Image 1 (cartoon, rainbow, N blue to C red):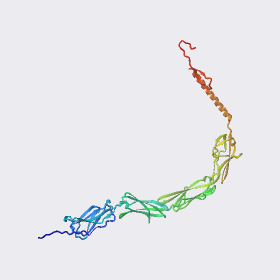
Image 2: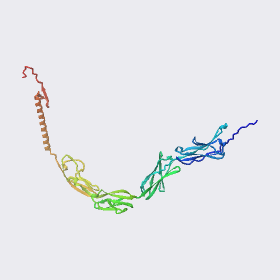
Image 3: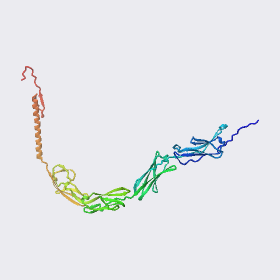
Image 4: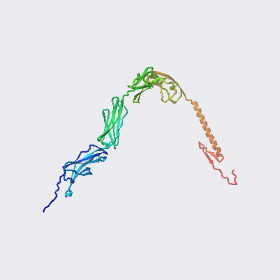
Length: 441
């Protein structure tokens, strides 16, 4: 009697490996997962599974002989695939033979996806920048993913600028400070790199030198009558205009001469400088003040020479003097040498009558003006007459009022004067009642 049985020979795969993924994968484009399997039998029970995390993307039977084979599957990259882990697994299913399912899994590999718009960055650069100054440079790009992975570089010519990068959602903004040291035109470059791609923007920056205007006085503090030369100058290619008078040509100074007078003291001179840059006019202004030194002068219009005041009244002696340097003004009575205050209220007495010498003095000289002050006594007789008239008028008014009251009350009642009082109270006498048939007399 013969007996037979089936013997299943199996062997696990010797190697299961997911080949390396792209370093960066653009969103919206396909990439290929490749899994290599070496060995493993029986082949008809061996399957290759490609995974995203725990999700099965593909399940295929292992083809061919138990030599090394490669199983591939295309995958469309999305933003959700960024930093996702991919792997492959072999399933040797011997459950129909009464055994179990044997699995071998490869080491996972992480995918990095990115999205970079086709638009160029928005680069904001000043059109002109003066030598020795600084200015801010800004570069912005929207629609980036992941924005935190963007690498930004700002450069001025061959100089890399130290930039500050800020991320707001899908927008990146880089800011840097540009400083320049020599004239000319330089290019500002903004480069944003994400993944395996980059975007770049370029703008020209014109660097210029604008010297001046420099406004000078040959004598900043000139004595009266001195010749003063006013000069305004600036750098090359700069046109200056002094007090409305332009220079002969750009780069040439403008000047004029004057004889300093009192009216020129504190006079301000103005100079304008203009520089033409690529059809644009840049302008600057400068000013300087002239001081003229002249002797003191008392303004007669503001210092009356004759004053008439009343005794025991308060007045202010108004008197002003001008000059450079500012003079000191004092007024003294010629007979007694008594000084009266200027610009301050004071009580006038009869002894203030007289002639006063008001003198303004400074290092440039003196100026004197004579002021006559006449103080009149108060008229006491006139005051007494006025007071007497007021008293008489008061008495007449009171008497008239009393007569009017008596006249009115007499028609309705009988009154008597209370003799024991100094004022005039009026008391009423009760009328007698007259009955019919009686004589009221």
